Length: 534
Ligand code: HEM
Image 1 (tube, rainbow, N blue to C red):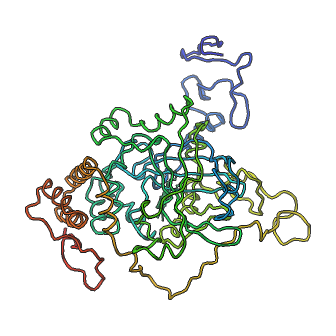
Image 2: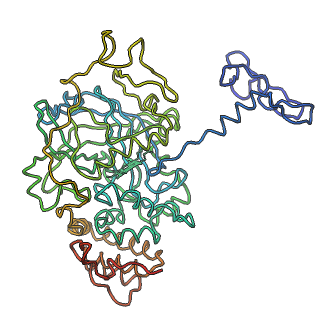
C-alpha cells in the first residue's frame, strides 16, 4: 500500500493516523502487542501529565535511548558490502587452508572499507589511511584479513598503538582537528618516531586520497605464514589489486568533495553495486622461505617495510567480487567484528610484534564495542560452516549447548570432539632467547624504504607529496616540530627536504636526521630528537 491509498484519519490535534488495512501489518510493541495509537502518550486528562503506566511509551523511548553503541576506537567511519572470494588454483603445496584447495571454488565474503582517524560522521575524502578489512566465511571458520590500503604501518610494536592513535585524533583539551592529520600532536609524535617515516611518505602521497574504494589496493601488511598438510611453512604477504586500477583525486578536489558530498565514497560503492557494476580485486601473494627472508638487509617481521615486487613478484591466487549491499547498515557494517586472530588451519602468524599485539587487541575491543561475548552469534559474525562448542550463557546468548552436555571429555557420547587432524595446529617455530624489552637492530633502518618510495613516484606525484607535507606542516604551530620533520625529510631526499623547508620559510636548514636510531645513552639535542620546552 502506498501512502496515498492507505486509510487515514485525523486525531484531535490534527495528527495523521494511518491505520492497518488489508495486507498492511499491524504495528506492535517489541513484545508483539498490537498498538492502537503511536502518537499520543497516555495522559491523566487531556492536558495532564503522562502516566507511568504507559508501557508503550516507555518501551519506545527506552529503546531509542539505547540505540547508540560506541563507535570503533579507530576506523569508526566505514562502509561494507557482501561478495565472494574465488580461488584460481590449488595452493595445496603451500597451505592446507580449505579455501585454497580447489580451483573455481567460491567462498562468501564481507568487506568493510574505512578511514582511520575520523569519527563515524566525518567525511570520506580525508587525507588518511583506508582500512580494507575482509572476512571470508570459509568451511573451516572465518578468515579475517584486516588490512589497509597502504602496505606498511606507522609503528613497529603494538605497544605504541595507543600513542600514534591519540596523536592523530583530536587534541584532548580542544577536541580538534577532526578527521585530519594536520596538527601539532600528530606531527610531534611522528617527528619523534623515525620508524614512521616510510608510512608517512605513503600517507602524504596520493594514495591517501583515493578516488573511490573501487580504485584502492589492499594489503595484509604483516608477514604471515602458509602451512601445508606436511606442516611445512612458507612466508606469505597478501595484496588486493583492484581490477579497475589505482586512482586518486587531487588534494583540491578532495577538499571540494568533502564540502559538497562527504559521503562520496560510500555513495560510489552503493551506486556501483546497485547498478550491477560489481567491483573486483585480485588476491596476490608474495611467497618466500626463511633463506630468502635472511637475504634481506631489513627484517621481514618489521611492518614498516615492504618486500619490493621487483625482488619478489606477486602471484594472483584468486579474486574478490562485491555484489550485494547489506540490507541494514547497523546490523551488518556496524556490528561486523573483524579480528586478525581469525585464521583457518593452514594460515598462521609470524612473530611481527605489531601483528602479535593486534591478535590481542581485536578480541578485547569487540567485547567493549558490542557489549557481550556473544557477538559471534550475530549473523554477520557467525561462521557459515557448521560449528559447535561448549561456550554458553552471557548477555544475549542466542545459541547454547543443546542437551545435557556442556563440557568434555564426557561419558555421554554427546557433543563435539577434538580433531588433531582437522584442527588448527600452530606452526611449531623454534623460539628462544632471554625475556627482554628490546627491539632488534634489524628493525633500525627507517629511511631507505621511505627514500625508495619517494624516488619511485613520478614528478607530479613527488610534487603532490611535497605540497601535502608543506600544507600539513604549515598547520603546525611549534617551530621545533617543523624543523624536526624537515630534518627527517632531508635524510629521506635532500631536494624534498629543502623544498618543504623553504616553503615553510625556515631561515636555516636543520642537520639531516641521523640514519640510525640513537640509543638511550647518546640522545643528542639535535632538532630530530630535542624535547619541546613549553
Ligand atoms: C580496527 C587495520 C594496527 C587495533 C581496524 C580496522 C582495520 C584495521 C581495517 C577496521 C576494521 C573494520 O572495518 O571493522 C589495521 C592495520 C594495522 C592495524 C592494517 C597495522 C598493520 C592495529 C594495532 C592495533 C589495532 C597495532 C592495536 C594494538 C584496532 C582496533 C580496531 C581496529 C582496536 C577497532 C576494531 C573494532 O572496533 O571493530 N584496524 N590495524 N590496529 N584496529 Fe587495527
